Image: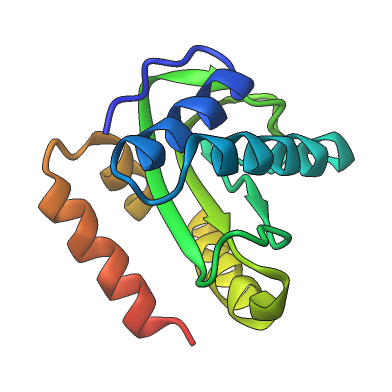
Length: 144
């Protein structure tokens, strides 16, 4: 809920380290995924504007399911966003190649937030994890 990182690479590393700390995958896998994320970012920033970024990779061989992670920076992170603004909300989406369709479906749902200023503001400011989870569940149920 409060990333300490102050730049894009640091934010990616911090999110991945959180997953390592919670034993979602190994440190070695984290390093591989970090390279994949940076490779994707080199093609064009996933900072889509309005304070939202969706760094992702659908080439994560060690992962067997789609994994989406919500992270937030209260101070904002320079992320090379298309609108030049800071990023406050980050959704990292990781998946194996075999789950590309599901990966794209999740990316589409997250991207719809770009059009919803009210929800973006709520996600950016709410202090409760439970509230974030409620909003994400609602988005998942209402967007096909």
